[in-house]
Length: 251
Ligand SMILES: NC(=O)C1=CN([C@@H]2O[C@H](COP(=O)(O)OP(=O)(O)OC[C@H]3O[C@@H](n4cnc5c(N)ncnc54)[C@H](O)[C@@H]3O)[C@@H](O)[C@H]2O)C=CC1
Ligand SMILES: O=C(O)C1=N[C@H](C(=O)O)C[C@H](O)C1
Image (cartoon, rainbow, N blue to C red; front, side, top):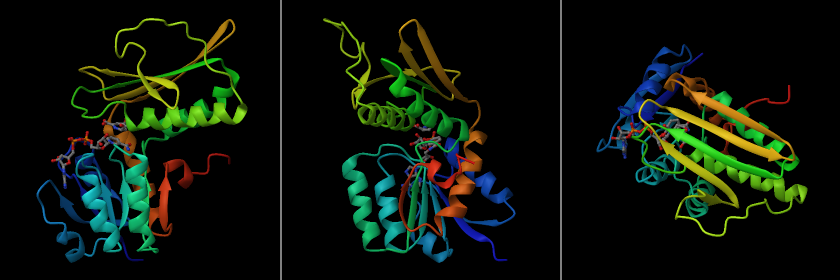
């Protein structure tokens, strides 16, 4: 069987360099290109890449994806910074290239995906929910893509269940003291030397609290998700948002 031809964009970065090693080590994949900032995207075409793993920065990801999608190269995207406008633009490009697949995964680690699903399931049963994400201090965006997605899923679950507004008597607050508001869910961002990627979802009800915590201790935690996404995206045209869609979480 022929090997899947995979390229990595952002190949010298923290997660990109780990992805290069993971693709090289996968028996069913061939690393055909490893591009950094300033490298020519035409290399993707010349190398015959079928999948581009996009692990760059929020200011680079759109240009890279436009190139990939318009050249029929599937993409597995871990880069953060997604907004409704950006997703609409990506969907426009995909509409003109209907056989191409793009997976955007706010988080590739199975534990983080499960944290999001558990938080979504638990949210309607508690009066209060807040998200705390904790990352290494070189991270350029806040809140994390994972925390933003978690908060969106919690808010949607609460809206579906008809949950009332959360109790909060705050009358005066310093700017930022109550965190960022993501669809009505407070999200707090900590940047601390020594950390990698961590998240807590705090849920509170009458006389009890539930804390769902996930820790990524090494970038290796993201690799099984990147490899799985690369294998699946080639047969999944259009936009898939969230690795959970490529996992059987009910089995
Ligand atoms: N979805 C997930 O599970 C994960 C996502 N991330 C996200 O991945 C992104 C990268 O994170 P890190 O590796 O920590 O950052 P980093 O700053 O270490 O790496 C980014 C790399 O991309 C390169 N780059 C920038 N523009 C480029 C371009 N146009 N073409 C090729 N390379 C380019 C930079 O020079 C740098 O080497 C961030 O958005 C981060 O939030 C990080 C870890 C896990
Ligand atoms: O920048 C990081 O490191 C990470 N970014 C992603 C995010 O913003 O959610 C995923 C993970 O948290 C690591």
